[in-house]
Length: 112
Length: 112
Image (cartoon, rainbow over all chains, first blue to last red; front, top):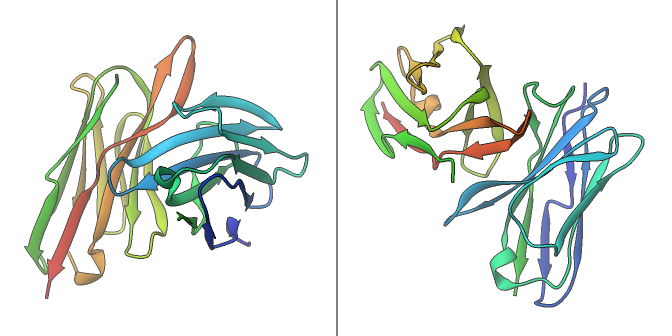
């Protein structure tokens, strides 16, 4: 069974640009969560989706958005990038909310 | 703000030693997770528990709901156990549950 796949693995952008990250969950998993990891703040929760609906949202500005498609694949978008958005973005999938989560390898975003 | 506190922050031990990592949280939770992160970023979910104790190989996780405390134990530690161990909780709020809140992690080094 394939694991959680995140693309791209690495990304370099400049301030003011926007970026879209993709996450394909494990087959059969309907819940996808996104997290940001930085050396200063550690891991922080961004969003949680289940069956195309956002169930929870973390304390991030509106520049951070996401969506989930009918096949459970999810994307997150960050608009008007800032230097502080440089981070490892992790996606995790689970059968449903409240089940154990399986993490992808992450997308490392560098904003110059 | 609901916090998750982990201790110790850093731990260096000799191969074969018994390891204990602690996690405490502030209010009611629906579940507590223990995660392992190796250099390079990959995160593996070790345990998800809401009561009692779970064991997988040389790893044991316990939780005391009344004291709002959990421990992760590693028996017969090995250099391959060297990693960052992260505690995360899903707090209860407004009749539902929030996204995960993470501790800052315990950086474990097992020396041969």
